Length: 352
Image 1 (cartoon, rainbow, N blue to C red):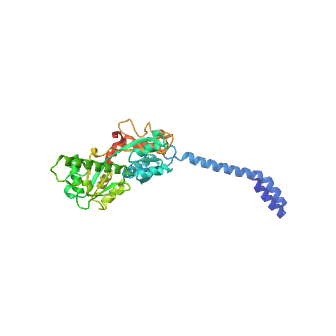
Image 2 (cartoon, rainbow, N blue to C red):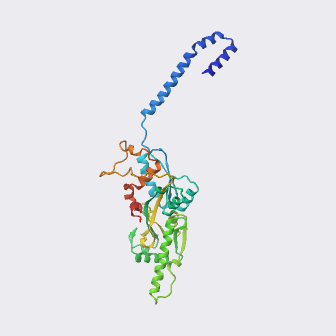
């Protein structure tokens, strides 16, 4: 205000209108009071808008959650994230790649809030390196391996059925013993499902050698594993794409991928690999923080006979919980865990 008066004074002195100048000095306190009153009214107007406008239901930090997920769990995560956003209003930003690639990115400072790996070893390594708090490591699902193939003469088994070791060996040998057969697996250096696939092949090789040694009259034959070519994908999703594009005769992939393909109407043969052929695929996550996460009590688990959605009455339970913690709570909730078989997984509680 003083600067404005000085500017007007200079103009008036230059113009010689001293009378007008004296008149302005007389009214200047009144002008200042009016401007101050208008400013205060504007502030009160803004405050009234803030008070009467209802705020949406949000987590404590009202931020989006950046989630890095192994390729096998990408589809279930998108469904779960959509439900979570509808319940809480918190957006979920998803990055999909192999567990090994995402693990390396986090080691180099990638700003993911949550990392959903296809194994437990990589999240555990982040804890061991003291990059993540030890209480921020939890199991979220148990993966299952499937063999998808094109050989129609072995299509007598129901799709996605659980079969015996002898039945699986028969199918696998029949499919992979044809000329120029190719088998797709995920790269075991990057993808845990690739490790499981290698375990299956090693188990098949051992069983074949055992059977040949018991039958001394059988002419010497090469094991089936030596008759086909392996094609490796950088993650389990690319591995499955090798099969769907007709590049390979069969593929060892996540059961969840074959289930999703069936829902879309794809005609393919798929059976579950017997669990005795590979180690359990325990899928774990970490919340990327050196501070302990708030995961209990789980605000999404209700004690009543029926579950109720979040609303004004239950909004108080969100106070003080960050978006990333809230998201993991939802993933671990009874409602989501009970539906994991729909996506081709077993609940985390089934993990050893």
